[in-house]
Image 1 (tube, one colour):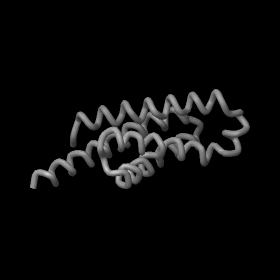
Image 2 (image 1 turned 120 degrees about the vertical axis):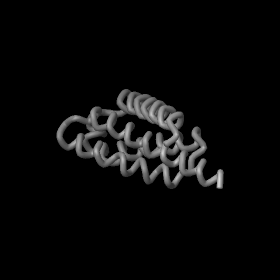
Image 3 (image 1 turned 180 degrees about the horizontal axis):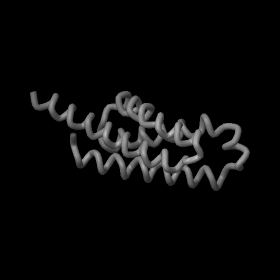
Image 4 (image 1 turned 90 degrees about the vertical axis):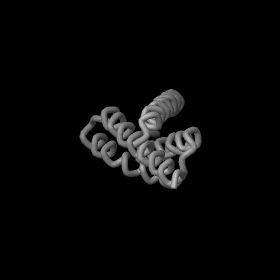
Length: 111
């Protein structure tokens, strides 16, 4: 596992999600999220993951797979009313995934 990538991925994803969530929350009505939150949330999460992949130089498709898998606990948290706690857990899982990808990439490049 690449610890530098772990912390950078966590910071980038958390910052991206927080900023995008704040912008969307300030510009769109509460009704929008009641009707379209199921689509807007995962789309925002994936967009932030794509930016994280780009900044860290990681392959896009494996990062998006990791983002989708990390989003599952977040979905469960949303269902029980702990949306932001789920997002924090998902950021941790996503960062771990990215760190593993980076380590595998480095190991593959060394051989």
